[in-house]
Amino acid sequence: MDTATRTRSHRITVVLCLVLASGILGSQRPSPAREPLVIHGANAAEERAIDWSIRRYREAGLEGMPDLEVYVHPSNRGCRDGIGYYLAGRIDLCTTASSEPYQRKFALHEMAHGWIETNVDGGVLDRFMRVRGIATWNDRSFDWKQRGTEQAAEIVTWGLGEGEIAPLLPEALDAPALARLYELLTGRDPITPATR
Image 1: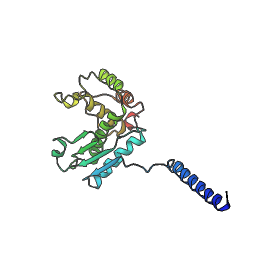
Image 2: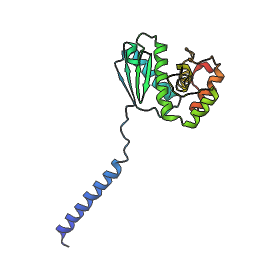
Image 3: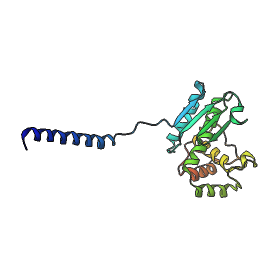
Image 4: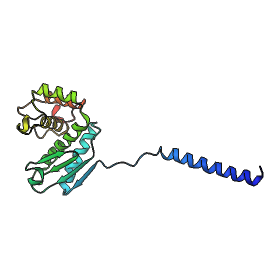
């Protein structure tokens, strides 16, 4: 092989090695951070309440929040005549007239539906329903407080909140009982100061 052929062959080998190395190394780069939360229609106070709520999940070590789209509405019509609604990664909040503690509470509550749906297995939910004496997970013919999905979201909300607002349950529970239910659902201790 003459010198020109050898040089050309060497260049081709170097180029192929570089292409292969950049492909391998390029695939090891960290992927860009995804944006799991998108907020629509919120004023500054509502956006702060939503941001505070998502931070509480992180502070509590509750990873695995699904991607969420949060829509804030000026009236309850956007929330099926309620204050909040969750369905398949979409949260509707109608808390414009609410105080900041309630805006936070309802954001935590609706996010809890998404977190539970994504992270809590059926066996834990069955055990939770047995402990609570709940007949249905989400049968809308039952009162809101009688549904497992709402009780679970209220308990997770309590465990993440600042202790200002008691959970809406069929009966009042003391902090140790709520903490046990929170631990059952999340596998972690609650971060609310209400346990102190």
